[in-house]
Image (cartoon, rainbow, N blue to C red; front, side, top):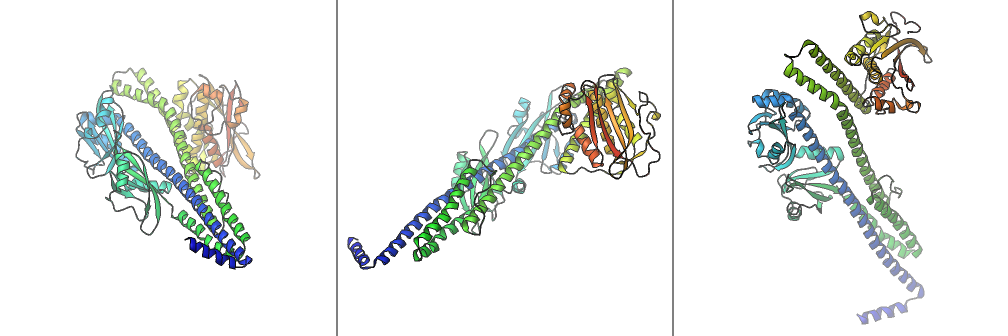
Length: 629
């Protein structure tokens, strides 16, 4: 080796200085290029590893969230069915027909559900759908069912079936009117290919589902094997034996490379009964890395033939964007998904890598925002509905039970009083449900109206008639257009000109306004409805102005500008009565859809007037007076 080195040194000394300098430059460039290539390899590998890990973290959380969401929906359904009095009576009578009538509408929306309704002795009362014959086992043999019955609480378990299939079992006890447990409602749904496809459709993530170590469903391109294929030995050891996640690379048919993470699915005792795998394709990043490193070879030859300066500039051009990509990747890994990749897209390999990373960042950010928005929307609706439905529903259930048990023994006056309370609870519940549904339609862009001639007299009469039980409860009366007080024969509402709009929607507006006036007005208050002509708009279009006035606490001036916003409630209203804050927001949406305007006038301590305008029909049969009241 020493003799060879000596001969090379003698050969180099015989060369001219220019040739030596050129040879040294070539060797220097080769060493520098090799070092840069090694550094680039490490940087890109780090980016690839970090980006893949972040994507797998999000995919795992998303899959688990959708699984928990489906379990939560099934738990809610099981509790709702178990709380139905019809189901308890059906169990007592061993009559499946009433129980099937309760669950069959649910199967229309969730056809993958299976219901088992059983008595306390374990005998099956009803199976749904009716074409399903069950798995043959008694309900209380399912893990968690006996605990739910004994502890009087809902239980959830993930069970591996005899055919190596995974199913979720929800067990909810059923009570009779005395509170005694009479049976159990069991809801089942499978963890199968339909669930995996739903995850793919909702999130764009590829995943696989295993029952034990057997593959049952997958959306990975080319698959990870045929259904029934066993997971690799290291996966089984880590996930099913040690109950911990496991990651590995997988090359699918066609050469596509994925990074997979397997996560255990545990039963009610915390033991793994299956697992799910989420995958992220890394082939595009691998290809980009190979292209980047491959560009060093021709660059090295060009620099060796030309000048070391060009090699230095080329190295700077190539490594600068890579350093910025490394900083961006570190920022993304730290959780910053809002700021885009700083490397400008271009046609070279670095630009392609930056473009792919930007697509990945945007995809992750979009998925996160969408999931957070869906979760916030769900929480908002569940909170509003649960909070507001609780009072009228509790009252209604109690009153109906009184009627069912004592209707033959109640005196007529007391019977009328109970029926009146039922009517008031139904009116409140109906108004709440309509407002919540319309709020959802407005948010989803499905809110529509059907225009036509509308008799305002019928609209006013209908709204006041609907709210009559609530008005009578507080001893309130309605005076219309300046006519005297109490509701009497139809003549108390004058014949009005025909408006142009949607009769049902305008009736809903009147019901909201009169309902608010009754809610926040004092007992014995006189609610005034005034109607008058007005001419608005550049075309001089004839309109009618409708105003509803109460004498309640009023609204503070700083808050009057926000009362038509969804879920906003004035401080005086919060103290006066409960509510969702949807009525005036829906009123504004309906009136603006008619091309009208809505407004509010209020004096704290003296009452509030809410008014709106709506256009008259093209040829009204009779004009309104210039001013009512």
